[in-house]
Image 1 (cartoon, rainbow, N blue to C red):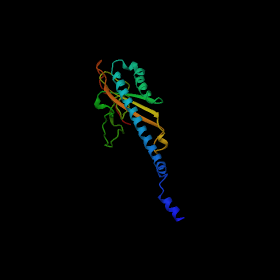
Image 2: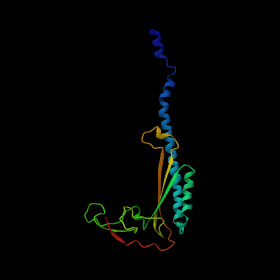
Image 3: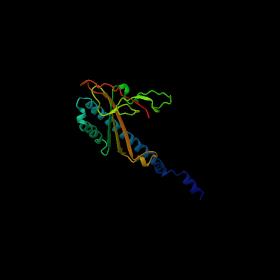
Image 4: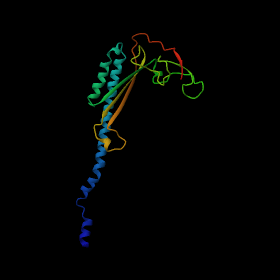
Length: 198
């Protein structure tokens, strides 16, 4: 009996298959994670390129009458990579690059860091209320800086969400670009409207 146990202890046949069985799940998760990352990076590059092209076309005079065609360019480019993707588009116009995604100016009378208690503010987008983003929706006018944002949601190409905690079945990707409209006319003068914070 002792000889049998000694022979079994020295016998290494089948060790490779056991080691492979132990390593395979970690290897597969790693490979799927890398493939998922590469796919998402490729989709992001396609989206960014399509946005640059569409945004360039958006800066031309008359672009506001061609919105569906401009957005269709981006949609086709993304659908070529992620066929089930859902896209949402947003455009905000600003008087200058310096005001992109900036809040409207206000006078902080009570020094609390928020626009409230009737403090005066400059209504840059003429909507009658103070906004944390001073942009106006749409293409803007001549010489305006336009922030073009596209958000894409698509199902993951690999079932990584079921294997790695914290992952979702859908991947969300947002790409933005800012371009100045062509000088096809006089730029609209900046709003001089004022209001009071609530």
